[in-house]
Image (cartoon, rainbow, N blue to C red; front, side, top):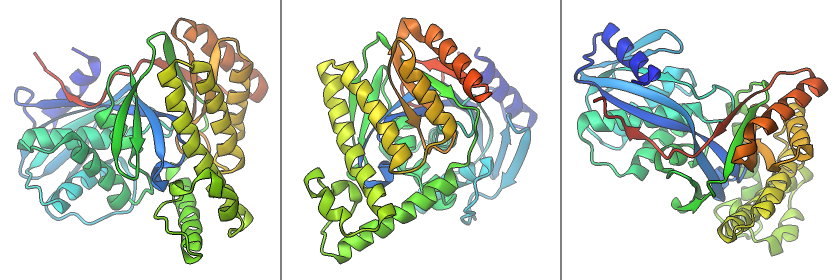
Length: 386
């Protein structure tokens, strides 16, 4: 039995839950491959699930008693009387899922559950979304809810966006829930439509954590405010759009002329990044991985210079990756301002490339970076304990 599954089952028993009756769910973290900060602007994104997970084991009960193995902390609360916290402690994400289910008029019991995970916290790999998706699926299984996978993803999204007050888009939760093995997930965030984009088995995703941690909430909220301000300005000037991603490239200069420098930069990033994702999907479908890699580098430059969410550590890692033989493309991933970069590489070269990049990074910046390579395992699922 997987050590993490064993850990949540042991913890469940210690807080009074029955191992024999337990349901166990696993939900993956995710990595954003292309499409930075455009999910909450109604744009098109590409993401992949990763081989890092949150495990949740639980049984139905009258109230909620949840233990975190990682934090060695147990919380108890009444799931029927939840009010929004607008805070982001680990248990707020759990509470938010129960709140969102009640908001959707789903009748659910409480639960006694234990949670553990190995998705790096603060590394831009959506540990919070993996936690929310794991809990949403666990509660659904325990209560026999017949909710479509996309609806469960929206429950998790509402937990983070509405209950916890983090201005995220739907990409994180959708990827953790809906991703298919060996495929990137393309999400049109305005319509919530999705498509699976196969990735060659010869290619691997290398994720390098800069060692610089950051809270994504402040950056997300600030950029969301800036984007809303730009959108309102354009609407007041007669633009009939409901999201910045609806601006066509041919109309970009006209839009920029109505905005101050900061807001024009944000809009330019969104419009060009949205177009990069379209071109990236076309490149993968035609087998042109080097064009896709070039778009990854362009994306990083845009996130750095126009959206201004990079960090010197991330810039250094991407620069080093660009000088390292075998790297097809590299860019920051997630909210930025710290966290991780993602590199597209040949699968057989991953270890050599990772060691070369991290060694040079330490030499240049004096910082230690950790790394992981991953295949794309697919989305959340219940585990068979037998």
